[in-house]
Image (tube, rainbow, N blue to C red):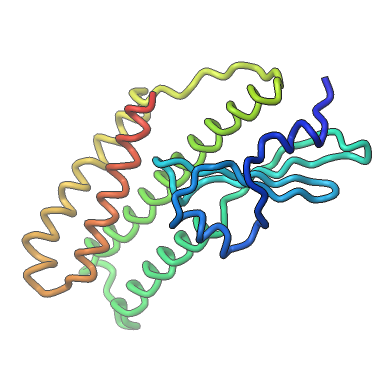
Length: 214
């Protein structure tokens, strides 16, 4: 069955332009209506929920000359991209302001390890969070548009791979909390402590959300 432009337009509850300011307002207003921008050859649709206020996808429905659906693509919304960019800049700033030209890697292996693991965990969690939200919304779209797709087996949250990851990340989070309490905060590095606590909280919240969502 051909999916027409009119069918896709029914996904949209509120028409909005796909701009940075509209997405920023979308985050702060906590408006969970499906929004979209309708163009001549494509329609963009996005929707957030209470569990994922910032890292939600924008789906682009590509249309042919007969206004029939030909493809669906996705990308992260501008606010999510901005947060990722700010976090990345913060990490780079920390690296370049603390590592001088005569920096000794052997003497500072712990700092290098912490920064590296920070990046690895952030990228892994962000990717899983985005992919999970994207798939959930795609399933709803396919059901609404009556598109038949091959049923995929969901990834088990307690697979051997995920168990091994958590055997590393959870103790590492506890290590960071202890590092904050006994070293970073006593030395007056409150901004670093705040960032570390925020990172640990973000990871634990995202991971537990994915576990209980299954």
